Image (cartoon, rainbow, N blue to C red; front, side, top):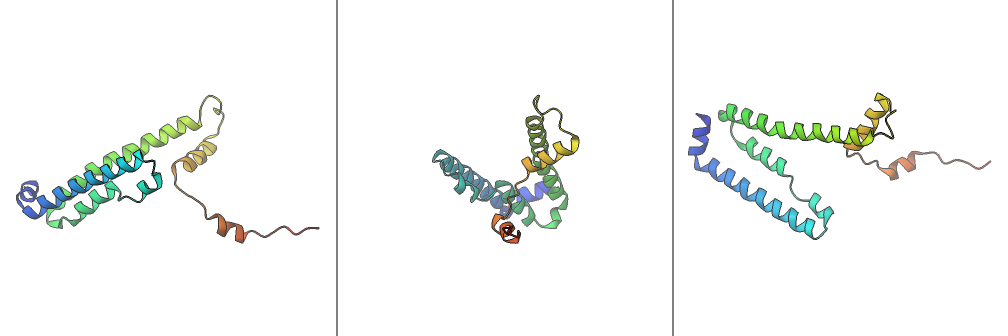
Length: 134
């Protein structure tokens, strides 16, 4: 019933049509930037998954069942992708040449591979005490 009600309201239909147009525009911009090798500019584009979740968040809670279903379906793909990415990286790290890694070492290597942590080198350098000469 909620789906029929959403589909019947022009405001929600136009919101999802606008989302579709925005997603297509972002995809086109990403393709053009990739073609021109402007990789850093791609990172500045809006994240497509964020746009989708923001749109669903604007739907009022009177459609709570529809929202729960949408978020459930949307989260499946993200979690599957992350799982596949972790296993792919783990297989890359633990190959025939590095097959003797312990589970703890493998876990640390996988964490380093799949996280986007970048340390603040300037701050770290200022916190280190300089070695005095003898």
